[in-house]
Length: 196
Image (tube, rainbow, N blue to C red; front, side, top):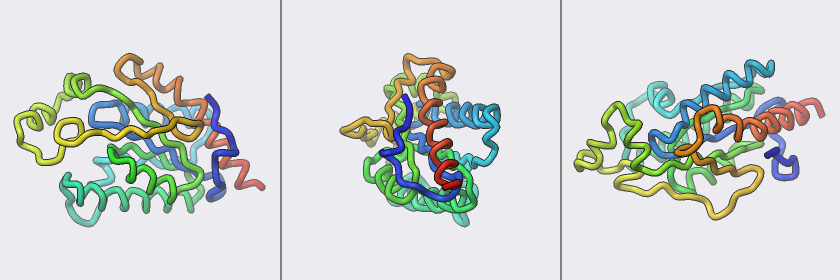
């Protein structure tokens, strides 16, 4: 699947954002790392990886995982992606952003924008969880844990700028193969916009 230019608005020269979303354990960080390797191999070195937990560590104060704190972290993540875009860098963002309004805010704020939703049932995500967060969530230790206390909201539509990928049945390599053409198209579109 390629990313049609008609579905994009031009942003900073050579810049754009790939927004990877899904509940914990769906494979966001794995895909983000795979995209970084693929961009490197393609000779596209101007990208910045913004992984959710790493972004939290960069913020000036500690945030929890309540809906209010998640919203603050979301806005900070968007600001960091905008900063990278202004510098001509592609932002690869890996964040849960489980509510539709969160992803729509990112879409309105970042151009061009590709949204990739990694779909994986809670049971499969929990089976991958070596840190034990899902077990603690099922035990009632968390007030807000996506997939247990709060649902992950899927979009009503899917198009060239909004992809949904099943990461339960596909391997990490297969997921990357599904997503890479659209990501490469975004990079090419952004580069072309910068040269226009």
